[in-house]
Image (tube, rainbow, N blue to C red):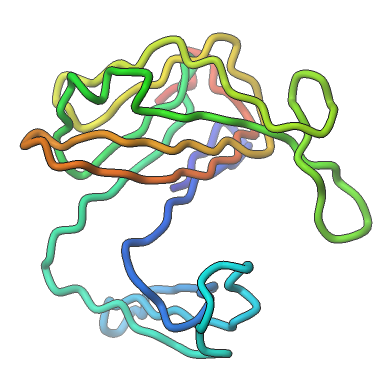
Length: 188
């Protein structure tokens, strides 16, 4: 889920609600049939699920089945907007207990990988973000997590547990890189 703030790009990702037979990377839409194809290697599994195939290609075929999902993530001047493809139960989605929000930076270096560093202290640590409110939009399809003094950061990790309007539980994880925070006049 991409966003451009002026000339600066940033994005958030979620887990797809599918079980793949290999670690997936490089998914693309085939312009001929409109389906999504993804290639995979066990090495792209990132130490995740055991027993995956060493390699593969898989097709995601649209069947019309509904999958509740986070449909967009946008940084706003006042915080982080999460959009959904279903209406939320506002009483749950407005509770700060529904969200665990952490952030950290990486150290850029010649060797691969990095520890996670506190954006505040610069020491090795993952920090909780100070979310002050969760405001559900009038259409109940998005929530704004208000964050005072929101700043660029290499990684934001959000775990959320909300309900849809019928009370059905929905859980998701969002990983988000924030390279720029729009000013009020850049928000849309």
